[in-house]
Image (cartoon, rainbow, N blue to C red; front, side, top):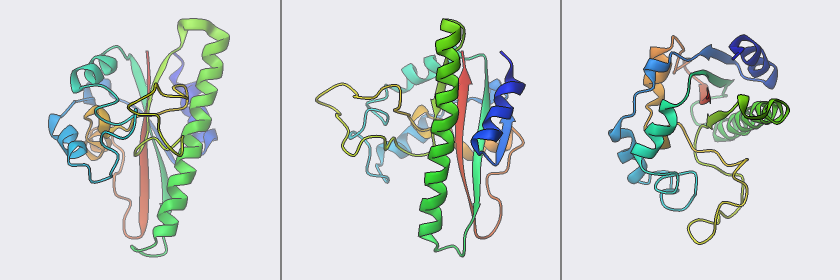
Length: 184
């Protein structure tokens, strides 16, 4: 796996920060999943990419355990003030575009190389690809475009950042969206 190549591609995709993930820092924490169960975002039980649709914590941990290396990426944006919700939404949209762009490039590379390249891409926040998710009645309509969040897999984002030498908070009037690309 040429991680330097994918780090460069991540920067080209628009991410502000890109670091190679220390795989031993992927620590599944049941307390993080409990935060999902509290449903503060309103997506618990309503989305294939969120719990419980994305699988139980053991399934998520199993998916993580087969990954060999990865990238921790961020989109960092300046806000007018701490109440700049439009700026937060715009930064979130930019992050999703960056995320989708890099994942598409990885999927294209996989199509060319066959099974020698596979990725588990974990996003910031819940999947918003479809206006209305098919969960739970029908299968996901776009599994290649759907993305679970880092937190859905029981990973504490701020701890991942700290453990990998990446800032989680960039100071007053900034926001950072964080995602993972884990290669198998």
